Amino acid sequence: MKVMLRLNDAGTLVVYVAKKDLEEEVVKQTDGSEGKILTLANGWELEFRDLPELANLPQTVEAKRLV
Image (tube, rainbow, N blue to C red; front, side):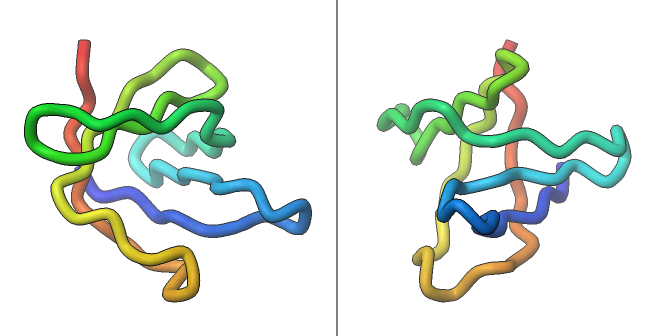
């Protein structure tokens, strides 16, 4: 799924999922088998193969939702 990554005013990483009209802060980052896993405040876990540098945000990237 396509998601947009950005930094909010407090400097926290935020993920926006347009198809779900969902915007949540990232509460945890871990390394997964195929890339970085970001855990959102609502409990969703999204896996990113190529997570962009924070300096290059906002940016739309491909993510995979883990169950």
